[in-house]
Picture 1 (cartoon, rainbow, N blue to C red):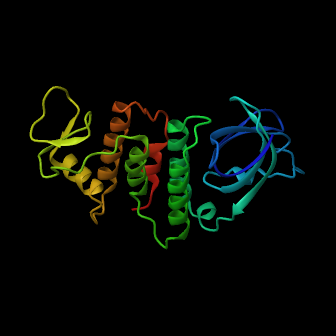
Picture 2 (picture 1 turned 90 degrees about the vertical axis):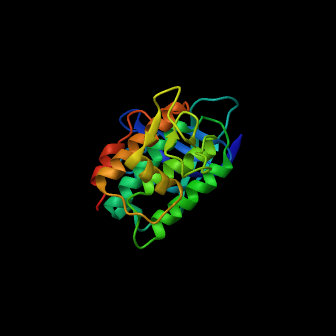
Picture 3 (picture 1 turned 90 degrees about the horizontal axis):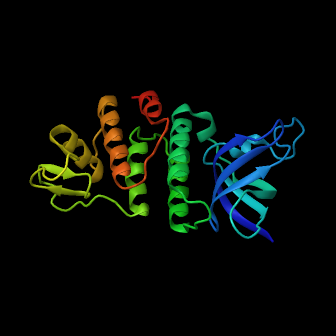
Length: 235
């Protein structure tokens, strides 16, 4: 059956000398893997540039029952991005966001609410005059909301944060996954969306906290280019 849906490009893998397998987050069908034959040829009708991370797409494909790689009939941009492809900071953030999504999305599981949120992030990344270099951190934090383990803001004056249970506490007990002192102060500022400019070192520390938090809640973000992104973003 031929289906049409909106999509967000995440990544592609070379399959042969002329073909690729593209991972696209679709509005109606969740994460899908698509075969694009001949796309690596010079005279290909569909260009590889369509598959740059976070490109907004219109997808027409043949949807057979069950999982597996689907075959694309037609692929086109639904909206051309003018800043993300040509600004290194925006490119790095796009790669980061796409990689994180690849590791948490479940193939064939529709999540239109998360799709809409990612569209908002893309609009922000594309449209803002200046992008906060802590955007990757706030994205991960907000992503945890859609995955069901967003940290509680209650009792945020307490001196510890329990990463395992996602809440502020008066003491550290029972396990070793607590943050405190400066790390806690930075995490609290991020969580409460306070207007704080984090240093490169502080951003790196917050990233490690968030990666640990995701791992504790069964979403291990392995092999992300996270550190490279955080380190390369302009101050």
